[in-house]
Image (cartoon, rainbow, N blue to C red; front, top):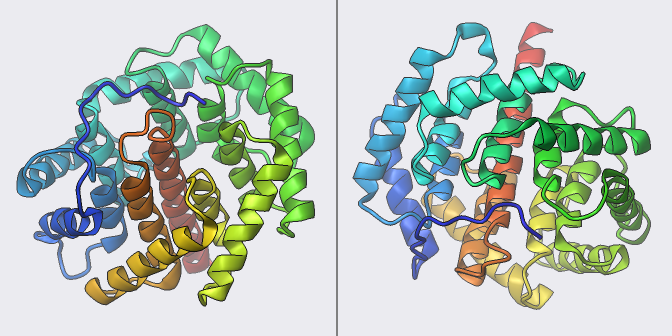
Length: 332
């Protein structure tokens, strides 16, 4: 299960929540009254395992955020919220906006060569995942060809659901063994097991969760059973899992802790986060709490650590979806 093999040093905080609040406060220091809090929170989550002074880290993220703003055209579709979280990713991995955007241009050209449809911000996220998967190296035509073949296999099973929003998932799946057909069939088996055995609703949210859960290498029946156990424990704790939560529960499925104990940790973090920060709803609280639990329980685990990046991709996609929904509502 190789998504990326990060060679940069990690600093696992003894108290992830305290470190999160420290980073969040540093990033929030210059937010205007109407500034968006959501990207600041995900940027803080991104940097949880990065050593260094929180203020200096926040300054670097702001510098990269401004650099993105200067380099990107107004019609790029990469709004300030996504630029903030992208900036945090680049700071974390020692990348730069100039180098990353040059790679995005290269990858986009190869996408067109493969006949992939234009995907706006999802092309950027796909390029980011490819860059992480390839450990900062440039994507080559054979990488993008495999990416395209996996996308075609996902579309073979769900032609209506599969679109550019699946580009980040294709980049994650690209590094797995097996033919693109094997991967497509495997993801579909997970999708059907979750629908059948965990009683989940069909749709984009289930496909996204299936893409992530296929990385586990577990049998579809085991995955569905684990998902159902976690959903049941969350419901018993007072949180009913909806479609918007499928990705959060999917990431928690990778953690080896007993379902009840894991949910106790997550719900404890969620309550503290909602008490500590303003304007955090239940879903956002669960998302942040899942990230904190992941860091606390996984630590430096070489195989599971990369899933933190997968979760961040899901978080960024959630930001994009929320912004697009808000824009559509305003237009109507």
